[in-house]
Image (cartoon, helix red, strand yellow):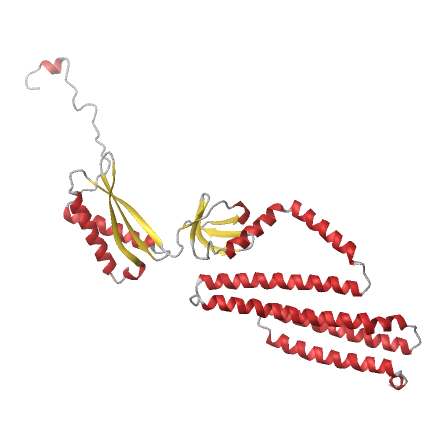
Amino acid sequence: MPWLASLERGQLLLLVGVILAAAVALSVLDVLRRRSPDAGGARYYRWSEWGVLVVALGTGGAVYLSYAGFDLSGVTGWLITGGLRVVAILALTVVAVRAAGLAVDRFADRLKAREEEGSERVRQIETMAGVLRKAAVGVIFAVAGVTMLKEFGVDIRPILTAAGIGGLAIGFGAQTLVRDLIGGLFLLLENQVRVGDVVRIGDKSGLVEAINLRTIILRDLDGVVHIIPHGSIESISNMTREWSRYVIDVGVAYKEDVDHVIEVLREIGDELARDPDYAPDILKPLEVLGVDQFTDSAVVIKVMVTTRPLRQWVVGRELRRRIKKRFDELGIEIPFPHLTLYYGGAGRKETGDHADRPGR
């Protein structure tokens, strides 16, 4: 290319510098893209490579147009000053995004190191890390974009003013959405509920299948899925946090010896705690709290058993089965409502001719 030999020294140095800088930047971005752990990071580095190519080609085109006789003194001056600053901003953006991602990942790794591998808490930490990573990338891109607009000579004050007014308008128009997002953020940060817990929210209860930033998803025993916005939650009753408990009201007849019944219940609890099928789920032996109520037909004795989360219903059903079976063996009566039916003709006296006949 004969035009390269006729370039001025400054133009030639600028062209060579841009080519070298673009080659180095593309090489670094290619390495980072190949080592990126997720598809989102790889896509981000691919976009960065295209940005470097656009800047390099634009600089080369400006040099060629200058050689062809176009007055690009202003453009050349901008490339040497503002253009280099734009390239520096892009490079700093790449570094800042990478540094933010590494910082969030390291913080998440420290939190996960304290938890049991594969637990729901680990998955919750990973969810929070993903949200923080996206938020950090969004803030960095916003700052970088505004700074580059300033380098291109765009007055950013109207943009900032419009953004502030638009933010207020969106805030007033989407108060419910903002409330849902804030509620979801605090729900994740305070670890109130985890995926896999059984909770009651208002008149809905079920297994927590997912916790999103805006909604929490429950599936009840009938298989119905309930999607509840965080902003509508006033209180949450978590039935499976750290440990669970199953409480039974055992009713016996008034004629039974209460002390004997309590001793039988304790024996049943000890046998259940020694059963290898249920012992791993029982955290504390059966507790007999004593006589709790005097009802119309029964003396109510309250008992409870403490179990691992989500296992209280399995242990409780087996406990009820054993109580019924043992009471039947020992003849301990569990009272239940009785209904006696009387036929209307059973006590009616005979009248008329039939009543006067002997032998009738």
